[in-house]
Length: 524
Image (cartoon, rainbow, N blue to C red; front, side, top):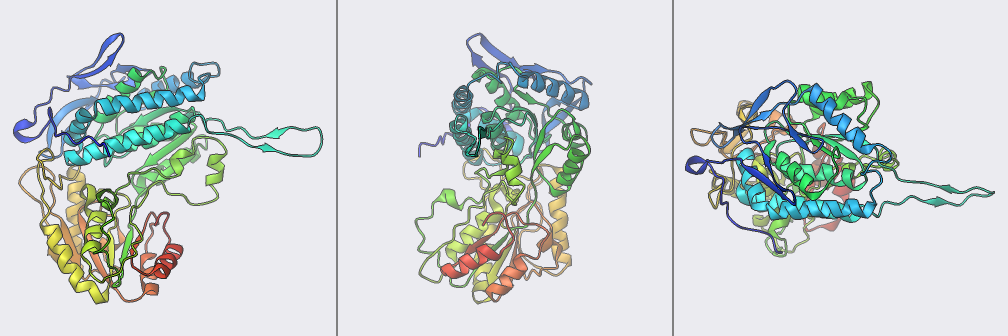
């Protein structure tokens, strides 16, 4: 539907890996140039060096070579960013007195600027992250949609009038929380940024965001676009750095009123603890998962031709409820229920015949999309015993045929893992699967001699007690598990410490609804 599909023009890998990193944000005053020798912080609408003068390299995961050095923020820089955000949020400031519809216009302007520069951003995303250019383009289009969605919400946040007896006027008023600290991961850099900025800015908050240290480049480019769009100084601040320094400073800062974090469960616990021990700031956490996908033998998805390719991409390309709660009141309401800020795009497929081809395709996308680097990835594929062997055979063939390589080469389906740490973690998980008795159907080792590529891996004969069935892998590893009955599937699906998402493929609406009501998952 009008999506941009142009191939990359200026950024590549291998023989095409030269990139000047000369970024320009066009404005009426001329061109704002971001330095090329070292990419710096964005505080109070200015690009500035870190107080310490420290830098860190961001690497191209396709070849493990340095792209550019980035200024490394720590507590001193976070303090400066929070001070700028606090000034921008003060009573009487330009941002606080701005009409809500004007905030919406700024968000729409930002989305238009991202759309203008989408090809460059997609190039930069693939260079810094390693995902296929077509995937980066898709992600950034979704980010554009996200900003436009929240632009529409800016002037539609209302309180309630409460009738009471006597000479009283009682009403509620939705107010912005204040300064919001935001920490995002590396798997969807621009898209995650849009999920964090969109609701916070629409409701009138100011933000201090730490992008993942592995992928800071596109976030800093979008920061330049936010200045061009006209956001007042201090409303948006970016402090690239490491979790134990910059991230910890955000989590514990007494003048940050809320923290929104997407990342690992382990780090989420640390953030919640720091938030509680500082100023009891509000916290939104979207953490890890070990999501089950249940495939019943009655699933005929062969005739479900109306399922679009976009729907098959089981990736978190829509924002859930938690990050929308940037106003008082909404936060308290969310405390009553468990809401997860990810959308698991597995349809409840109601079909007529008995083949597993489409189920294999959906399960493949559920785990292998974005190289398996999804918090809601369908990493436990439960298949009913009647079709288990057929499913394993077809799933193995599909995984083995996947094209790995340079994200800028047309037709590439899978790029590298994000860095050396994740590369080794995934290989260690694969090793544990072999040692604990799972049957390796395909893959199981690295691909090529450089970069962080791992072959798509399929295990069969997986049991619930195995490490690969219990712990988040965050890589291209599919564990296929046999089951007999619906009740067994529900019990085993819930046999995990996670509860992010789940999916079911069946033609029986009763099974679908029973499973959806019984599985302990935030999204089905």
